[in-house]
Image (tube, rainbow, N blue to C red; front, side):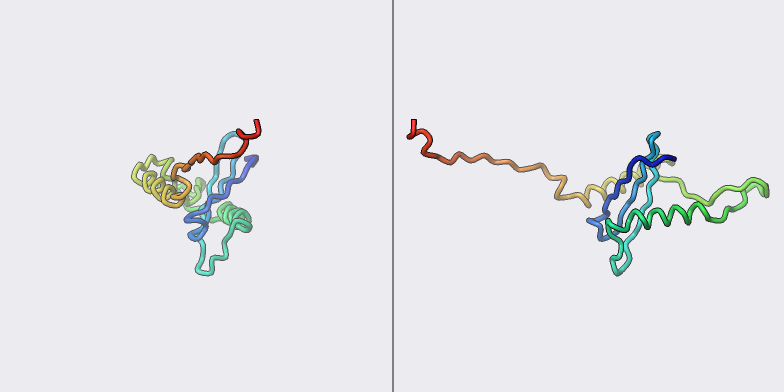
Length: 124
């Protein structure tokens, strides 16, 4: 995968952690969710490096035997995402969480225009 972009998405303003998304040139997206520790040592500056470390650890994980016992065929021990499994309840929960996290930004912008008299009319 050739990475063409990286997105850092804060969870609860970064207090809960970050999601780092690596975007590939073919439209692939690999997401790594990182939870913050009690010291809140995770921030925007080190989130990408920590996500890369998680990806390296994942790439080097042990594999388990397939359920049928075929010792030559191995597969990684992975969990599919809610989107891949079409889990509507989990996707709805994640959407609600995202909306709560971005609450002030989700409100419409309030624009007011005021007319302040000037002496411009008197000069003509």
